[in-house]
Every structure is written in structure tokens, then in C-alpha cells.
Image (cartoon, rainbow, N blue to C red; front, side, top):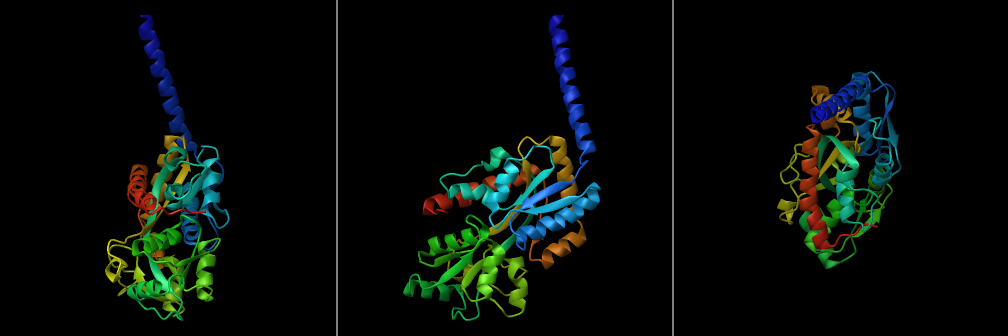
Length: 322
């Protein structure tokens, strides 16, 4: 009988904990929520502000964006140390799960220290150049780089970010030397290219579409496996002289590890429904991106797939970020 009473006590305790979690999810949020991301003006900043605006309406609570400098690392570390209460969220891309393959030491483990909420978007990057560069195609770039190693350069944002990773994989797969000019963020890197400080950049589509349309930059190729509707008529890198090349930029929303499941479920529901709205999709496409959404498990699988694929390639070529 004592064993039955013990079992009954365990079940009762479990039910109390479950009900407490459900109640917590139902009362959440009762104070402002912050979404931490990288620098002002970059692609992540745009996505964070779009989501914050939509969530403010859906949660009937203020959701603010907090920019943490030009490096995605600062935002990641900030959220990783935050309370697991759902009031501090992270919007970031592959820096979270791929930078550990390029640095000997980082302060986080992407799968251990963060609770995935949903994949936000996916977009190809595009190889763009300043109009003064005589090269017009990927084949031209490869020919110039082989003829004069180190004569060409490219701008990039923070180490481990899509603009940096795309260029380094391009260089490694092609076996050429092109000099990296590093900027504190993606937006400054684009400005450096516009000002003629550098010659080329692998950029997020949204950050350069207006400049391409205005003739301030020229396109050479997109990094996706298939041509992109965002840049009609622009070939892929793989079809332009570097077979097998493919890089796609993805962004997700995360909470600190051990955030209550009821909170994760609430946020996933609200954000994915926001991403499914036609007006949201239209805003994303105008900014050069495609909304995705999906379950936390899907985001985890996407991260693991890139870690196994791109992460393995990073190790193979010995790519190292400062």
C-alpha cells in the first residue's frame, strides 16, 4: 500500500508541475519581451523588427529589438546567459551553429545552450561587385584570381556569418587567393563595397537589391543550388565555374535552454502564424527573403544538417576565424 501511495504522490507532483507549466504559458507574457540580434541595419535587424511588430500585436505586450553591436557573437552570448523565462529571445543565423567549427573556443554549444523556437527565413546570397571591377562572371573572377593571387579582395561581416562563410568556401573550393576585408557588420561591409573600398562581396539578397536595381552594384551569381527569383537571369555559382558550390543563409529564433515548453509552444505558434500571413510573405520577398516557419524540431534538424554538411567541409578545408 505504501508503494501505491508513493506512486500516487509522484503522479500528483507531476500533474502539479504540468498544470503549473500550462498556467505559465497561458499568463505569458506579462511584461515586455526583447529580441536580441546583431547590428542595426543588417538583414537580421530587419527580420527582428518585423517579428517584434507582429508579436507586439499578437501577444498584446511590447516586444522590443535590442541590437548588440556588429558581431552576432555578442548577441548569442547575451541571450545564452539570460534567464530561461521567455522574455529574452535571440534572432540569429548560422553563426550560432557553425562558428564553433571555425574557432578553437566559443562560450556556447548551439544544441545544449539554446531552445529552438522556429526557423524564420532562408535566402540565397549573391556575389556582387563594384562596377569598376572588370570581371563580369564567376569565371572571370577565377581567372583573375589565378593570374594574380591576392590582387582581388572581398568585404565581409562578422566571422562565421553567411557573407564570410560564403566567400571562404568559394576561395577554398576554387583554390585561389582573394583577400578578406573585414567590417564590424554586414551593413558596413555593403557600404564599403558601395564606396569602392573593396571589389566584391557575397551579400544577403535583401541588403543589396536596391543597389543592384540602381546600378550601384553588379551581380555575378547566386549561391543557391538553383537560380533565384529574386535575381532573374543571374546564374548560380555552381553553374558558373565552381560545381558543387551551395550556401543558403538561414535565420532562426531561439530562447535560452530550459525555457518552459509551454512558452516555446506559444512563441512557435505566434511566430509561425505571423510568417504565414500574406502581408508578411510580401514584406519578406520585397526585402529579398523567403519566410519559412515550422516546428522547433525542424529548426534543430536544419542546424544538425548544416553542422554535418557545411561544418564537416569547414573542418576539411581548415577554415579558421579569428
